[in-house]
Image 1: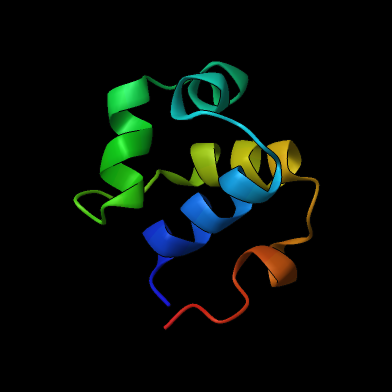
Image 2 (image 1 turned 90 degrees about the vertical axis):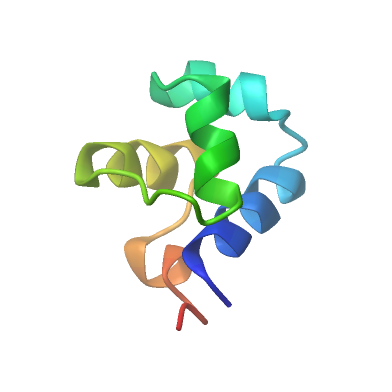
Length: 66
């Protein structure tokens, strides 16, 4: 699984839209869309915010990432 697929999977599990997730982590909806489509990868500061938003550990966040 790629990082973008994992972000999308966790977002859907938390029942969040891309816009809702973007607001929580301080990014744009377009950035979240790019992450999920593996166009771009989030910066470290966004990864920290994503881990907090999804309420998972870093190990859980990166589980199954290729």
